[in-house]
Amino acid sequence: MKKITQELIQKYLAENKIELRCTHAKLCVPIIDRLYRKMYIGIKFSGIKVDEDLICDGHHRYVASLLAEFPIESVPFNKTSATEVIDWKSITFEEEDWDSPKDIDRLNQRDADFNNISIEELVKLLK
Image (cartoon, rainbow, N blue to C red; front, side, top):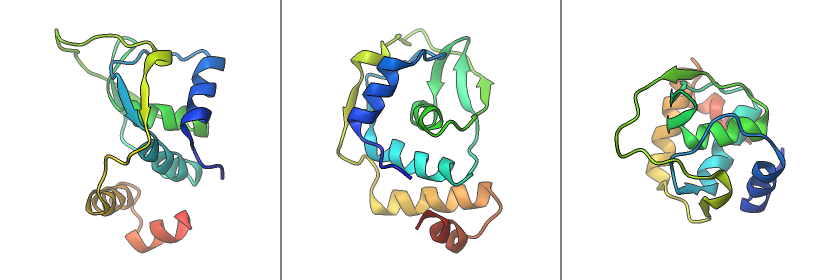
């Protein structure tokens, strides 16, 4: 399993047609990497929220799903009047982790629960 880097993400986005449009100016590389690793081993996630072709919630999951070639569901959602479209090529990918270790533990537990496995099994699968 490859480690996801900013360069790998940018290369993928530049070389592929991306079906959905972005509404965030910044994304976090470590979050995308963690999601990618989980998708790579078959962990499922809730659907991303989409208004027509605009992602309203789930940008990190969407990018990870593209990199992992892992289908993710889209659920209808209504954008707000403040929603702006951001070109995928102009996104800033931050290397600093936005999640604390406590956040990561909480998210791992949520993902284990969503997939009906124990947290111990999830951690073992990720090694």
